[in-house]
Length: 353
Ligand code: TRP
Image 1 (tube, rainbow, N blue to C red):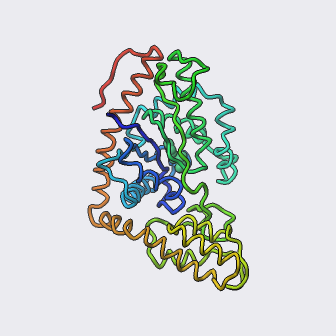
Image 2: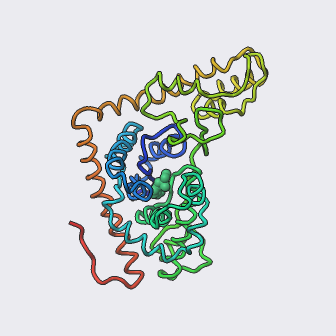
Image 3: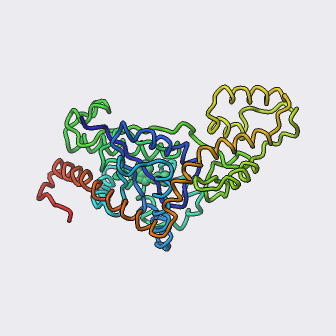
């Protein structure tokens, strides 16, 4: 029995934070046994905005792998995919670029939002919008069933589904009335994969709750933060509530964290109830309990990370990446071959050295 596949990944832009954890990483760790998992390091995508900082991208790539391993991703079970060493991804990107309209790409809500918020509006490279098409190829190169991602990635998955359907209809004779889940059965090369959105769609940053958690906004709690740092950052959450006897809003930013990280549901319900009634429960008390819960989650991650923060640690990470690349290329090359054959491009089957 072959297990169904999962593909997802991260752009190496710095260390992973709690938003990544509840958005996707937690799921990845949990699904490793049931699924054949591929976790992609989108280092090519990092170049679309930081082409002038190759050394930073290299180091960020290594750091993300440390975060993954710390979080519990097991490279024996799951395959780590370095995007720039899987040529089939770049080749499939070209083909998918022809199947998606220019307006679909440029109107992709996540891309539009990035152009607005990252100050790229009048200066982005030709390559930048290509990352969205590239993401379709990242996914489809592995023909996965599921793509566990945070809410912000949903438009990309929708685009990927569109590309898969179009390919199968054009080149594999799949009817345009076929159900998504039947595409492969009907001869399509690509499954129409489903997004699996995280348990917490959008985790706010440690602040007033207006912004999402993000490294660039300076409100992130990193998986690699120490216990004191976590408490300090949690203390920066502001609710505007004045005293322990003031009735509070159990849906406020502080409670978004409580719901995400305090695992005892009875305790969460009790805290909410007392908070709403102003039953002598201060924000400070809740923050202490919250920081403790987060630290309980992060402690084993810190211990696992420490194993790679020794001399030679980076070299061991690079060996893990190389082993992943080998496995990834077996699958991606097979996909490329099937796709090219469907397109009448079966002029030879190459073998990567
Ligand atoms: N765009 C994703 C992010 O920034 C990273 C990514 C690249 C990805 N390729 C992917 C996620 C394929 C899921 C599937 O977080």
